Amino acid sequence: MTRGKLIKELAKKLYGEEIARKLWGRVEVIGDIAVIRKPPDIPVDMLKQLAEELLKNLRYVKSVWASVSSVGGMYRTRDYVHLAGECRSTTIYREHGCSFYIDITKVYISPALNYEHLRIAKNVKDGEYVINMFAGAGLFSIIIAKHAKPSKVVSIDINPYAYEFMVKNVKLNNVEGVVEPILGDAGVVIENYINTADRILMPLPELAYSYFEKAVKALRNRGVIHVYEFVRGSSRESVINEVISKYLSKCDELSIKSSVIFSRIVRSVGPRTYQVVIDLDVVKY
Ligand SMILES: C[S@@+](CC[C@H](N)C(=O)[O-])C[C@H]1O[C@@H](n2cnc3c(N)ncnc32)[C@H](O)[C@@H]1O
Image (tube, rainbow, N blue to C red; front, top):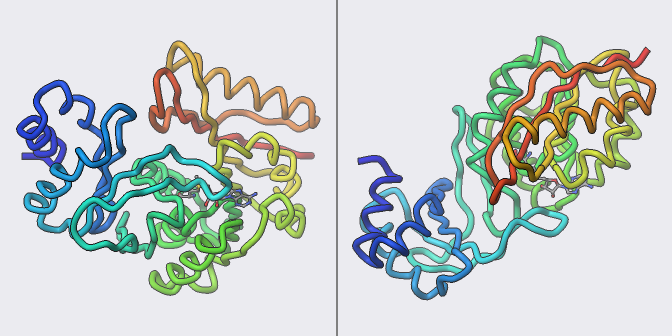
């Protein structure tokens, strides 16, 4: 039985069909920690039974937490309540052959970006100079360093915890000298990298647009910028088109040539709301 199906069955047995439907799809496993995203109308105490069942049925899970807020704040973290098992929020999360120390309460982490992490890494050409403006605990950067041959991946994050985990993760994955963690505001740090990068990642929808011009300045004559945005819209096609026209207009305004070489919906993040990525080929001169 798949993990998803098992969780559905456990929830159905404990709470009945109607509540099980609300919990279905709300359990994420990060390393040996399971996180249940609390539905708004279900009290947190009610989730304790499910947490105990997860511990019994998923042997690799040692700790279960409820996330009780959406992602928020400058560091893009959630609020958590411990439900069962070890009261520990640190773990080692594994993805694409890389390992990441993280603390779910202190740094952003999302297994839903799994596909995207490898997709970008596969696009990186030998010798490229990459800047990751919003690097978190270093997932994109380290996966790029492991699966491609960049000359450098400058990895910026404003969260001191994310920076510390990134430093540890660089060592853990033996990518010192390639991935360079930097603590700071990407909008300020990137000013030290004018005309330097072949590729820039902007995996923070809240700041991508306002920092886009700074990213363009950090590119060499020509390069690729990966932009992530949240959009609400009536269809998947319309939200992608909205992001494309927003950035093509911005490029016109900045008098630079650009074309969209790839676009996709990364995931659904709410009712009719999606995270979209577009890859822009930018020619400055
Ligand atoms: C969505 S998370 C990044 C996810 C990460 N790239 C990954 O794949 O797991 C966004 C990150 O941007 C960081 N951040 C927020 N504002 C920032 C800023 N002005 N400069 C640099 N980092 C910032 C947050 O601390 C957070 O770690």
